[in-house]
Image (cartoon, rainbow, N blue to C red; front, side, top):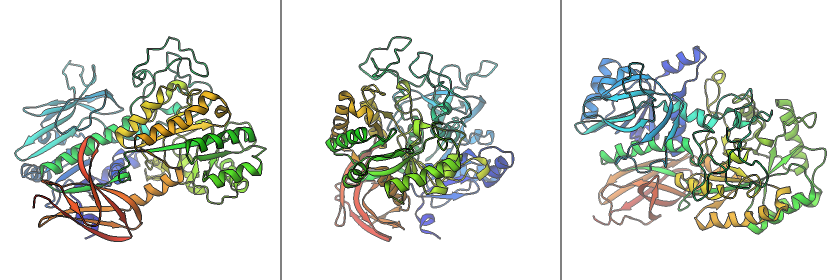
Length: 602
């Protein structure tokens, strides 16, 4: 039995027959996204092919799987004895055990109902791109419901529940009518880009400019999923689209995908709490750091005056930036590159597919050639980060294949290009490994997606978006990414916004890391597995890792804990996703690390 199997309190069911059937038909096996969610949070789990109860697990998550009558009977017994069954594959076979009737397929906005299991509710309704309507039967509760007419069938029957909960003796069955896995992938990765997207009707986001880019495949709605930042009046319509923006524009104000998977993990933690099971996971950043900040720079014209303006602005801000070098027939003068190296900025690629040079086209040979140019001009053989010029994008995941071939480990291309599409157009402030297309069996692509949120405050982004981005990144413990360009840092208002932004983030406890540092951290933390076991007088926390990680935040729930202490790690009470945990500051080495936590009540 592996360490992962021994420590897992959560079983994840992904039926391989369901995956094979989908791929054979040329369809995505969306349920594979469940692995990415649990791997990112670092909740220890075990994967099962069939929905079969386990004597050691406390929560079973059904990502994909249709139960037999025998399996249903066994699972009902397990639930009544205290297990939590979370059905995120709303098949009719689950209906009776779940205490619901199934309505028609639907999609739209979902509103959450206050309930003790929700410790962090979204500020407003979230977008679901797929799902079915549910009707609670008997004493089944509604945890979230479809807005408006979504879920109402042709006969006028209201199947308006989107997430339900049924109590069976000591346990519960929770059912998602929301197509959770497809929703998560589509919000973050969008749809394949082959044509221009539709612009915002108010004129604030004219994305139909004839250039293919990430926004053209957005799943979120420019009409329904944006809000004007609090404290600012609704802008005139049509919006006066000029630089700098004369007034605040509606923006994508919520990291919706993060709030969806956060809702799932809140339900998992609630199930473990009901079972009085000590458990743990790994914070996304170093211990005590509530969220991360990242600043990038695009070299664009490679003009010395503009490069110097950026160097000076970042020095004033005290930030080491990820400096994306764009292919041109000129480069900076040598003294600019020397200053970049001395200041500790990261050299990255700014892949150009804008058609202004022979090799500035969308395609693998062009990207490969530009990568070699960036290596040569910077003298850096190990370029691991990239951002596409103008957030150019075509297709769905072919670009990630090119990154894998080159050794690009983290990409930050997916973000806004317009004043009215800043914020969270791809619904995330978190890192993720994208799902590949059907032709690669939806495998995880070996490239981290680092989302972009706005660029050039007081020029391409109204200053009102700054605090929304920072505060929402803090809410979900993600990373806030701000981009600056050299020519705009020559403008006094944009120049002044840079150190001010850096100070605001630091005052809220955020650190400023380069994309390379973020990449290294995320890849190392994904090697760590946590087990928490009750022992006489307290708990044992066992960590297993194949990579070292300094100052990691090991987040634990310790039932009945009173002033817990540990000789080998500092321990503090923290709030994560609205829940109270204890966080141990641990330098994790390769192999096994064991910590003894004493309970002050013992």
